[in-house]
Length: 280
Image 1 (spheres, helix red, strand yellow):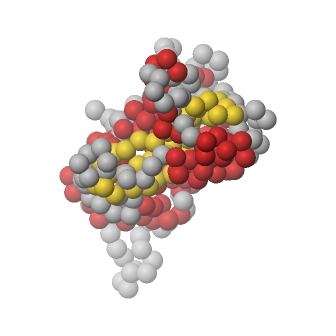
Image 2: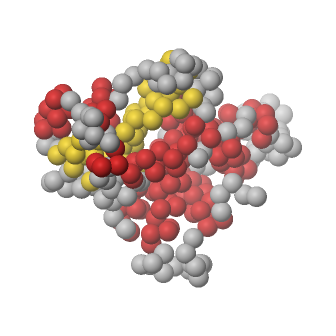
């Protein structure tokens, strides 16, 4: 069974391949002028998708076509070049151009996941008997497409992470004049309201002491996006120790979510070659 359906995996790979630098088939630095063939990028890309989706180790997913060392080496090479971040940005731009991003209604929320491998983003989790965990402060638009995130140890509170999360809006270009930010009761404080007022944003903040379903408003979109992220088990139980690698996996996941949403939403409004007769 494929990790992703072909209607989703193929567009991702075509765009990802276009971002890759040209590499020779053989290593030109080899003293004898010969060397083993370079593992095809498509094989490594598919292996990374398997690691991301199933959460397995690199050794468990390696086979005769690609070793665990090759997967890790190519992963680091692509992460250092910023290719995963570029892929995510291209997917967001495509969503904005074709169906439009709902930037009038934003939502921010924190989510704690496990990080048993420790590393730069790990800290004692207050909800898991101080086992190592990681927190992400996620920013989504009105439909739930992730716009960015701030990663921190699990023992960081949500409120101090709000300002750096909202700083991600500076990378989105022109924004609507009236923006409403939907927050849960964990952000119900005068400091949060002062922060939003200083940025010219309207806050829709749940009140402490009132049951959540009564005041859920537009926050259910970000809860759904957190569930989408946690469906990729490498993010729900992260063994990566370096922040750059974790960010790369999140960028790849955000690109998958954005392209999947784009295909499903544009199915009823657009036509293209190879379009399925039924909605995915």
